[in-house]
Image (tube, helix red, strand yellow):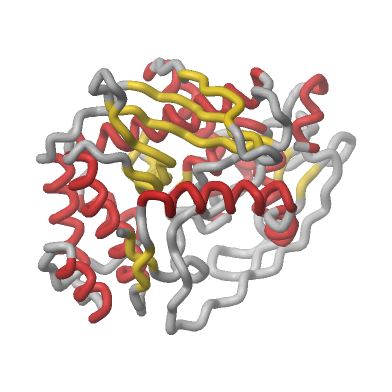
Length: 365
């Protein structure tokens, strides 16, 4: 039984567990808006753009300081280039990122220039999210989630309330996993290579050998397994999930990581609805800090092992039937090296990269 709060105003867990279209992140969680706050409108950005995946493209520096409306210009072949190093703000700062999501890192791995473009012109991504294929994938995913867990509405009033709902869901699912049951939509977070990263694992379960399996569902329009390029990004996704989940189990995530990276108030008193739900599942807390402490102690002292097996399950949208399952390899050294390469862009240490001309088709997927 999962609690639900607000998705639209507070959801920083901009991750998906169904990413057939690697460039389009989705927010697949059991959350129904019941919020009592007004959202702030997004700032508008002016972008000049052409050939998004061209390897010679770069991003202009911001025209105004942080906290003001920014104007970002994307250069293309033949135009005057300006180095990111001329900008005093890193992409993390310019795009107001307190953290990165696993989905965003996977998008970056697929086509980095397209990822940058989607941040500069978010309305295009919102339009892509309305595509029929994306909506069908979300419906299949939500249906699978509700096969094993119900949704309980909880009123939320602050960002701390919204995060608390997710932490309470984690506490509930930890107990289910310890009992040998399967869970779906398990949030994970932690610091990877100095950057706070968040994600949502599609499914955790034990197989007949007693191994803890991390399973990722991918729905596909085509009734066939994906190409090597697509499968490679999917393997990156489950590998990052493993790093985050195992870090939680090992006790590597600290309270300060959560509070400082997400800019949350430790002493914030949780709303009445959140406290009531916490009490209903046996968690007696008053403030957000108390809940973070309870979660981190519970997960690190639990009987949960690190994940033993990573697998990707491909599902056909048309027939609603399975296509096949692939076991994902895991090489931590290689994975961290790839991650460091991606993070170099977000830290402002290099220009965004395009893809080779042979892979220009990635922009169309």
